[in-house]
Image 1 (spheres, rainbow, N blue to C red):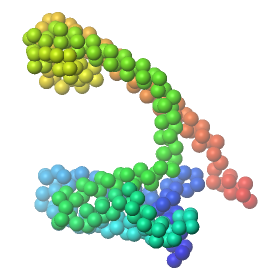
Image 2 (image 1 turned 120 degrees about the vertical axis):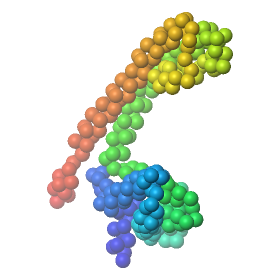
Image 3 (image 1 turned 180 degrees about the horizontal axis):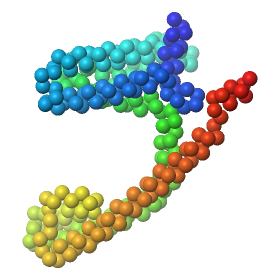
Image 4 (image 1 turned 90 degrees about the vertical axis):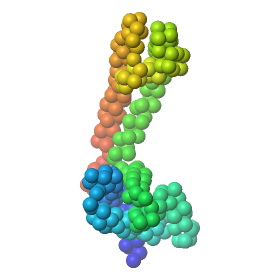
Length: 267
């Protein structure tokens, strides 16, 4: 029994091997979590869910049982965590932790579809558990490298934000001056015109507000052309940061000894 509890602790709470790979049980749970989220999303479409209430019910029960067993296994095996605290205190800490409470809420909601409306959608909260499951995997190391690369370009992003703010203010002021008297509801003030400026500069262009005067159209054309270059600048910075992060991550992983090499060193 002690071996089984230790095994479950390594599989669920540690969740990764020394070389950063997810454990088999943890990987299987992540796949089940993704499947549960997909089923919950599909279940919100009436044309698909209509007439399949019985199937949906039993699918929810299945996921609820799986997540319930996982929760019980985590609660039981958490006593293997290092520390002098008694077993009941370790279990209480896990049960009262944010992720432990989320786990319990999702299990209860999934197993109580008759008491909670659209209970299956609460399974989307399991995404937090999935994030924790991969926090020490190779994927997490890659994300940390990307975050580091983005932080190194913080000054570049500040410059772009300053330029974008200036362009937005100039665009809103120009359209207020050109269109304010003609379309007071849309351009009657700089804050009102700022909505149009944001939508135009971000190249979304809802089309709910458009300039109608010749001068307003000229200003709008200039803003639209400048916004293309403005959007391309952060895109290039992010792409360069991502490339540097991946290159650094590959270099780090290449320097790590392979499992066979480490075993040879141990022998």
